[in-house]
Amino acid sequence: MNFRLSHIIPVAFLLFLTSSCEKPEKQWRFERKIMLPEESRPLALAKDGETLWFSDPDYFRLYKIDGDGKVLDSITGIQRPMNIHFDNGTLFIPEFLTDTIWQYRDDKRWPLKISKRPQAPAGVSIYGDTVLIADFYNHRIIVETPNKSFTIGRQGHKDGELYYPIDVKMKDKRIYVADAYNNRVQVFGFDGTHQKTIGQNEKINVASGISLGEDRFAITDQENSRILIFDYQGKLLQILKESIFYPTDVHFEKGRLFIANFKENSISLYGR
Image (cartoon, rainbow, N blue to C red; front, side):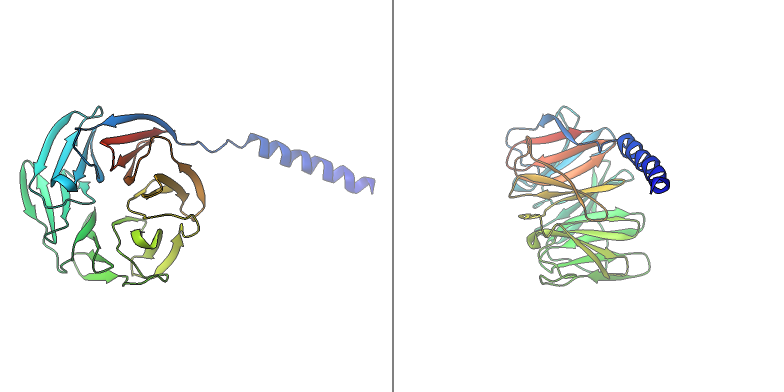
């Protein structure tokens, strides 16, 4: 009996030391608000170096601002611009009311050529030669590559089915969909196979925007004015509520988190 205790006590002590040395998870904390032009309604965000683009679908325009909210550039005449994407010097703009994806660079605008026509594109993301489009009214994701074009999902509420998807992102050949009116995130392989459903137990009410970080992702809970942070296994890490009002998009950038407050002319900035 004494022999066993002499081994158990040191092991227990080592376990205590190991657990006590583990660093606590860094939490996101509200830092400040970036106030925008008074009549603007920021729906979606795209980072352009040290500046930020946001779409304003109510007024058919987009703004480029600095870190204090000063307007540096604007684009008008886009009929309901939705979830935008910035890549390699080009801003990609889904125009909801004309079923068009626009490219904008150096004050010039031209349509993106795609094989499959969406019905009300709600979001676009670009990864090299791969284009992802959230096809809102067709309840699917369009995937365009140089060699093929295919779709993921169909209308429904089961795993692998979508109901008015609004945003789409990709990481490590996995496609993450803001399955907005199913109130969840769905993860698909690049071949279209359903891999995981996340957030279905968190009482999300409209999952409208998603952003992928290095080891975690964020999803907007639009109607509940929350941001939910998950790891890639689907574990809920944190819920953000402070100074968030009807969030429609979220964006990770170098240890910061930008949140579009659609019903307030502001962007909330969080840090860690």
